[in-house]
Amino acid sequence: MSTSRRDFLKTLAAGTSISALSALAPIDAFFREKLKEKFADKGLPSRKDYSLNKNVKYLNHGSIGTIPKMVQQTHHDYLALCETNPWFYMWSGEWNEPVAKIRKKTADYLNAEAAEVSFPHNTTEIYNLLALGLPLQKGDQVLFCNLNHAGASIPFHIHSKKRAYSVKVFNIPTDDLSSATKEDILTLYDEHINERTKLIVMPHIDNTFGLQHPVKEITALARSRGVEFISIDTAQTMGMIPIDVKNLDIDVIGTSAHKWIQAPKGISVAYFSKRVQDQIDPMWVTWGQEQWKDSARKFEDYGTRNLPEVLTLGKALEFQNRIDEPTRIEKLKSLRTHAIKLTHENPNTVWRSPIDWELSGSLFVIELKNHTPSEFAKKAFADHGFVFRPFDNYSTIRISPNVLNTHEELDELFELI
Ligand SMILES: Cc1ncc(COP(=O)(O)O)c(C=O)c1O
Image (cartoon, rainbow, N blue to C red; front, side, top):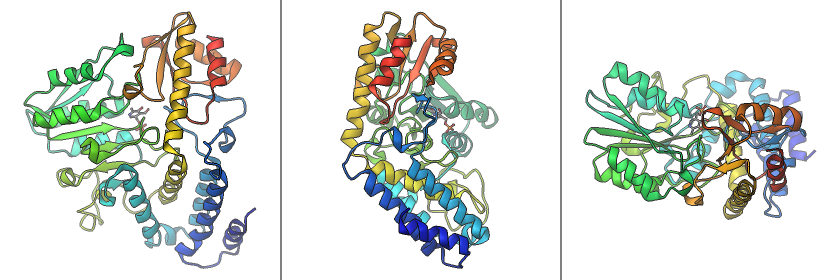
């Protein structure tokens, strides 16, 4: 055990009264030491960096990610520290400075400003906030496609009824996505945007077919047609592929940090451009309202909240930031290319996601010709420990590998099919 960690545990045990910042120092030092060790050779994280059950072959990072052991350890340490003096750590403001640093770090990750970042609980929360809080009037229309996730769609369907704006859902055909082009997707948006379209919500990469929207092109088109608000749902992309909110010209993103950023469940990230912040009514208001009026901070929890998880989100981002980006992408691409090859070689499977990497990511679906997906998933888990997502309505299974997965796991899965 490192000295810094031993010091930290001793401090906890002794119940020494210390400032929050000095109490955090040994936790940070322990984490830094572990990071340095892990990334000394610039290699990618592997399975041994995670605590997955040894019998589990985890190909479902698109549903819920798994947290690196060193991030988990830090999470435990923050929780333990918090419990040594809950009032002090929760309410005294002692953790304000570390949280401000994490906000800045998150903003840098997205090419945003710190005052444009908030820490909600998940993606669904952000779309509830938009459905309730945007200035959408009678006659205004919210536009999204059939691939928009329920969490980014249902809030608009439900709240539009009370608020009298309308929702238009258009269809992106999914029968032959493997040959789809950017122009095909752009043409569909072009056809469905009209003078009433006030907000467009699009999945950056959707969760059912793994289509990566050509966001920049759609945004340029939408702006030229007078659309005021544009949001991308980055639940499946933040931590998988880079996101530059300024370059994409986006107003709001909502994400699920428990997937690809590998942060604890129940803490997440959102971005609200300076331009739109004042136009959105916060979902809850209380004492901080005035203080945070010029910042996206006003869109997150007040008072007693999940601060140990916010601090851990910072560590999860540090971990992800240490992974060399081209190496990450190369690994994810190679898993995908391998899966495409296996699909073409296997007479029982059909590739149903876009082929082009620019239009996709590390989440893809394969049609099964010889199994009912949910029955196959049950059996593949019970007998072989495979975890992936079945979609019986499309006769597909969804595979979403992360850098810790291997070609051999894919070989074994296709062998089973
Ligand atoms: C694209 C997409 N959007 C939104 C969600 C909902 O995320 P959360 O449960 O974090 O709100 C998911 C979850 O799988 C998703 O894949």
